[in-house]
Length: 290
Length: 282
Image (cartoon, rainbow over all chains, first blue to last red; front, side, top):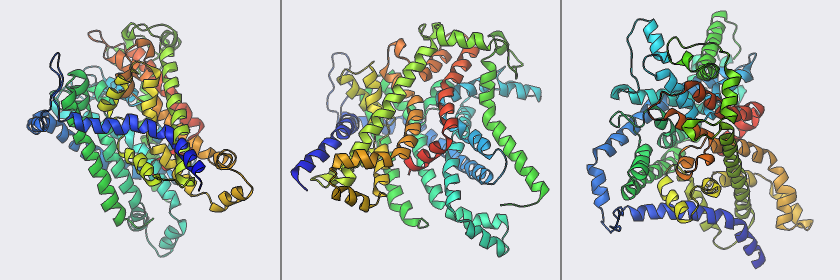
């Protein structure tokens, strides 16, 4: 092609490249760079400190705590959300009256702003007159403080997350179910297989690519979703419900320890890259159904 | 799966209804709470049916100023949210479709390098890079401006990826036919590619609009001026308003107002929403 076409192509790419370089590439590189320097404070400029920030990270109990929380958060929300999503998708994939309405009710929580949702749940969790305490009181139990005690704060956040995410995953399972040829299940039925058997031997294996795709996205989301922490617990009590991104936010924008914030960000980017690489090299090769 | 077993069908229906109830109940509660005065919500039992303050509360919120958020009416915040969501959506779609067009239909030096530079950013959603991106925006002097709010969120590869996938399904014969008829690349883009992408653009529009509307962390960092608050930020401000007891009836009203646009969009365009979601996440 002629040179004129090269220039046209470059011009078409120009806006995307300018924005991406300015707001994604440059920031990513400067984060790594900054993580080797100290935070400038007052008159003291930032100086090169080598791996000091990383040594601090390894010795930082809060870092390990939030990383552990992230792990529990992922383990506690993802399997349940996926299970609920599959059940909901199987249900709304049948023919019945008001099907569209039920489907919509199932995925409505997904589109709501997490902050607004968290705030309704805060109303439920409020000690004393919140809905949960009212039901408990009605059943004869005493007051609870779900958000205020270290054992229950994180599970309380997980409940909100599951409520919001299950419908989101359901949409992908619904799409997967609809792409399975009905002739397969019909054939199985003629051969005398029951619904249970059909699910485990035909539907579930055929939905495997969706399950893998949804799981990877759910893991990434578990690092990204922190809005509800701002409303519900503020990471407390004693960091019991803080997650990595929330800790980054606190370190960088509340204590303005930007170098340490950069170091934490590097860890987070590295984790997400590992997940992405894992997805490309392991998962995609093992799934051949599509 | 049509089975004529009355018990099973009964269980199915109960499960469906319980599911719908569980998912919709919180929203219902918020709606009910927003229709009461402050007293009804600060002691048990919490009302489960509407009170008589609904219009009063909503007109207070939309047009009057809330002291907790610097006297800015929620109506103003919703406009701010709308501008932000529309800016992100329109900006991202225009930038992405041009980039995808160049990547798929042109052969030029460094094409693969550009391709990888765009797609490597798929792994870096804005939340992950808030701190460094904030630094860049601060250095460019875009803090507390609408550009600072919108442009960094426009920069992402997801939409480019979606358009690329779609363009690759368009048959080569169409491109050939256009070329034989003497259409240049821009003519081809404008007269053939853009009309063909209509549904994809609409689906993406919905997804991005909801994504933009629901943003919280980024606007929290960028906006300092209360008149620039988005409605999602407004809720958070009202909840954490220091020593005073939270004003639940107003908070719930604001939450409902913040939920209306996403719900409207989904109700009106359910099919496109699902299509957009399934395709843009692939």
